[in-house]
Length: 300
View 1 (cartoon, rainbow, N blue to C red):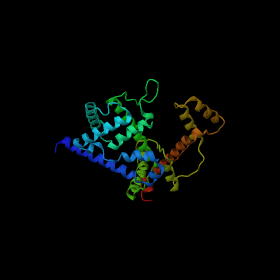
View 2 (view 1 turned 90 degrees about the vertical axis):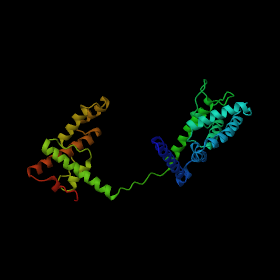
View 3 (view 1 turned 180 degrees about the vertical axis):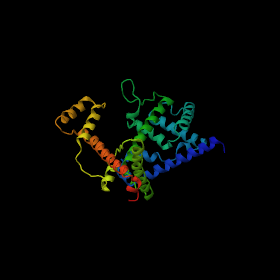
View 4 (view 1 turned 45 degrees about the vertical axis):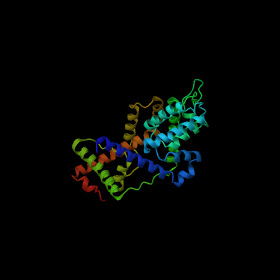
């Protein structure tokens, strides 16, 4: 099999799986209860056999009849003129096959029905007066039917957004293996921070408070809630030197000079305080020549 054939087959398999997944979605009770009847009609039309699944012979026959019926329904005066309709149907066939092959034939028919009753107005181009342009100007031209089909596809995308939104949020269950890996990664972050501080004098800079709480829960650090003046001062200076808008800094400065901690400082000051307490503890076990991997064991 040639590479281009393998690629084409792989694409077809993905498209079929995607279609099957959509069929299953439409069997979901939440979707059936929450999505409106007309939207469900559009969604169900979209899971019928797509144009790409038809042979050319099958498609030519069906499209010829469809083009004639569509022209009659929308009021094109030459709908019964064999010579004109032969050309228009052939052009319609090639356009569908090349650019709209993922639509079903039912969707093609539905697109023109929805346009006629104003259901596609939101997505149609506007005429010179700002109104939705669904005029065929007495010709079943490529310009006319592509604007209808493109508007339908936009409508269809909105419908499927509603369908997926109607689904309940997925239940996420973490496996025992993933829990083990997460735990190992957590402790490795502590070990790495200690090694960098001991060997390179890089102070710990944990973002999440769960690292500090681990030390506290083990009784290695006092969990006192009160923050030191030094941590507050550092958080204040960090905010002042940042590109935070002056208007936001003004309230912080006013509170700071009244010996108050502005809300904007609290999380930053806590992070600085927690990391400083961890640094002090690191100094302690370095002086005592202890191994962080023994003091804080993964399995504990």
